[in-house]
Length: 92
Image (cartoon, rainbow, N blue to C red; front, side):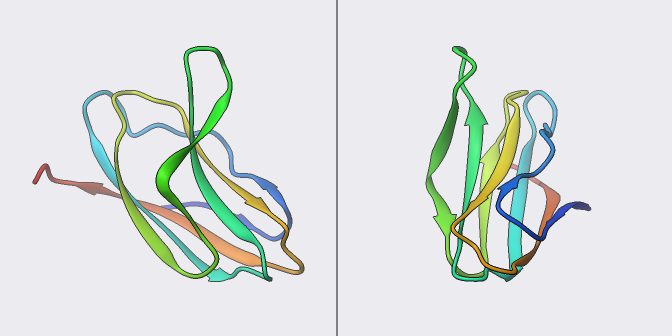
């Protein structure tokens, strides 16, 4: 499912996979020399980047959501076109 297409620095809309679900996030396209970061909202309301959740070229990350609020942040990019998609994953 396509969540967002980033064409400038900024954030995707906030999303969640639901309580107890796992999702595979795929970030792919033209990064425009930028860095994409998968972030989760902490209990304080601050956004925190996931460990191994950043990339400057196509990458995927499996995330256990536990009803967490997630987003992808793109920074330092020039004329990017990044697709952020999600796929429900089965537990390992």
